Amino acid sequence: MNPSFFLILIRSLMKKCPQCGKGKLFSSYLKLYKSCHICNEELSVFRTDDFGPWLTIILAGHIIVPLILFVEQSYAPDLWLQALVWIPLTIITVLLILPISKSICLAILWKQRDK
Ligand SMILES: [Zn+2]
Image (cartoon, rainbow, N blue to C red; front, side, top):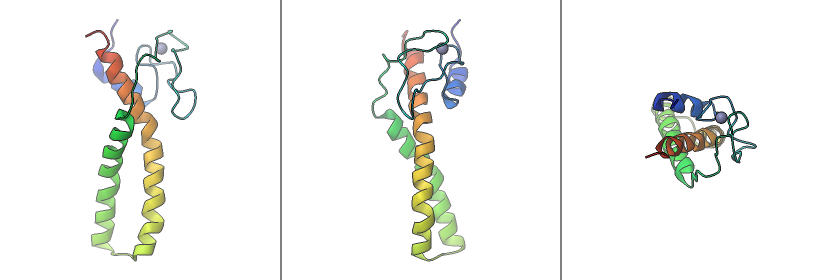
């Protein structure tokens, strides 16, 4: 059975295998397993390249920039305080989103494999 695209996206948000939804995708932070340990689906053939970082920049930018603008317009804190808050928050946000972005990219490529 071929899972729906919505189900594959949900699985990718959880960093799980697009085929079975149970096996883990990553052996470390961004390193993909060669194949799923549950269903043996080949994962190493999908090259995500720069799509994951690109998607991460888009998503993190749409999260962080509105927050920065809101805080600046509402409270106008000193620049040193903003740098102290926003730089680490941006780095943490990017590090949290990057594996999910790579997983989403893999899911999209996996869904397109038969076409
Ligand atoms: Zn699997």
